[in-house]
Length: 286
Image (cartoon, rainbow, N blue to C red; front, side, top):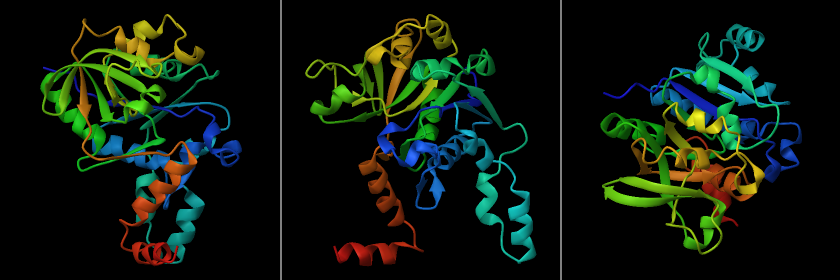
C-alpha cells in the first residue's frame, strides 16, 4: 500500500536569467503562454493529478505569484457589475489554505529549494514540479506518474529521450530493466560531461519523491555548478527504495528560454479555436 501524494513543491525562486530583461521585474513563472502564466499550467497539472496542497518556494520579487491566485475583489465586482462572466478567473483562485509559501533566501540550487519546503512536506511523499518546464499530455504528466506510483510506489521521475549531444545540459538516468513506459533506475548524474552520459533519458522536471530525500539534502553538499543538486540526493536513495523513471507520453516545452517560450506559444495557440485561424493566416504569410 503506497501513501497518497497530497503535496506538491513548486521551486519558483529562480532569477530567470535566460529570459532577461523580461524577468528583471516579472517572475518568469508569470510570463504567459497564450493567455495563462506558466505557474497556472503547473498548478492545473497538480490539481488534476489530485494534489491538495501547493507549496511555493519563493524568493525576493516573487509576490506576484501569490497575488495571482488571490481573490481579486475589485476586478470581480467590476466584472459582475458589467454582467461579465467570472469563469475565466476560476482556475486562478486558490482555495483557503491551498497555497503555502516558504522562502529560499539564497539561490543555492534546486536541491536547496526543495529542502526549504521540508517542514511543510513533513513525513509524506510529495511531488515536485518545475513550472518553466511546460508538460502537456492527456492525462497530464503528473497524472501519468501518479498512476505508475499507485502500482510500484517508491520514487518516480518523469523521463524523456534527448539527442546524445544534448545530455550534458540535463540530469540523466542510468537505466535498468524496462517494463513498458517504466524503467528501473540504477543511478543518475547531473549534467554529465559530453560523451559520458549513461543514457539519453533526461529528467524534465517532474518528480514524486519519498520524504527521506530531505535527509540527504540536509547535508547541503554542493554538486554540479557549485549548487545543491536534487539529482545527487535522489541518487542516494537508489538501492534503499524503489526508483523508477516514467517515459512521459506527451509534449514538453522548455519555457525558460526564448526559443522554447515562442514555440510553446505557437503550439498552444494552434490548439485554440478562438485564435488558431489568425495564427495560421499569419504563419502562412511568413
